[in-house]
Length: 297
Image (cartoon, one colour):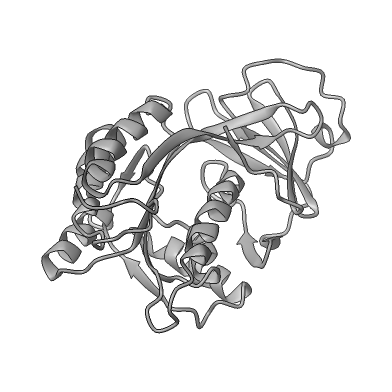
């Protein structure tokens, strides 16, 4: 398992009964987590006195209960600053477990030691509020950020400004990810690295339906066609329980390793729980990386 254990501003304090107790900067939240199927005593003060609590509904969805939480606040990870706010379906605008992937690909980008005139070109699909975009840009990459939600792209740009990266070489694109990739293929555009964080289910800006089980493999295949001749890395994240790490490995080996060589690995990602020393599973990631002896096959 890859563990995001380098946070200072974020902690999973405890988890019990399908909920987790988290500290986001100065604020303590209770949010649902279906992985937490065990029941343990809720002895920490935060369980009784949170700043906000998201309650799931038996009919689906849910709602926030606020006690003492601002409309927006910020937290930091290394040199990055993220603006947070509670919004639909329990989210705050950041998936902190992804920090373990930010650290990985940032190191890969820096090892490349890019020519300032020819930086590593990264495509970030389903880019949400820009965590991966900003990490790649801070490492020296030129990033194309694509998300179907105009609101998410606006939020990502706010995070870029908060992180001092408002003038970094980032293209902000509001578009359906598959359609964008297909157009880039027709244009002959290429990228040295691709990151994707697809939802289990979603809709594009014109109502296009996305179901990960049906769409992920065709998207990986389409992305492979726009990789540069000597790509650097490829990252896929999945929060869908049906897509196990082995499934990500199989698809990446079929489409990427078979063509470019290199090395593929896929594992669960997780967050440490401070009260129990457990690691809370948070989905899985598949990573492909070019190796010194990689070559087109």
